[in-house]
Image 1 (tube, rainbow, N blue to C red):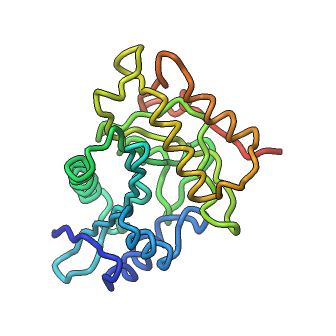
Image 2: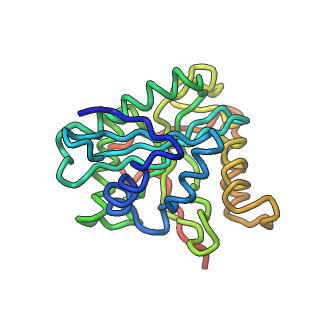
Length: 240
């Protein structure tokens, strides 16, 4: 097993997208190869693949840096079905989290996962409950926010029923209520940057966005939940 950093011009991008990402994510959650290359070219997106003995990708992790908030978002983590349960995903996650901490010194590393009550598992896209267990083993916790994924394109729309996780929180971001809380200021800045980048600054305000941003405005910080009880996790549903 070998880790390989992906550059914008790396021909491995096409293989990673076709063989690893596409089978693992619904179309609404997946950016195109061209969009991923463009994000890498702007210097804020990084990609790492795990290669087998034949130098074929068997897993990949992609993250995007939001400098104003000092937050890194794990946008994709995927492992070939044949490699699930082998420990490859956990080793890759540990590798990129360490790399991002050294590279960016982020105040937080976050990830988006499907809520088991909103998304059924499938052979192609995996089991949301098992995914929560995976992130729990690697220190993940759910942020108490009414979260949705912003529309990645005009064609896909927003994706509801997602949970925003913390994978790493610098001590400086601990809320005033202490351990188990996260200061809302950086989270709010990240969410605004993410929405502006995906949906555009001209997007009119709406109730869901207002509720999401308001949930970060808590004097003691945003609470976090353990991932072992999905029933406790915040759940959003599409409007209407």
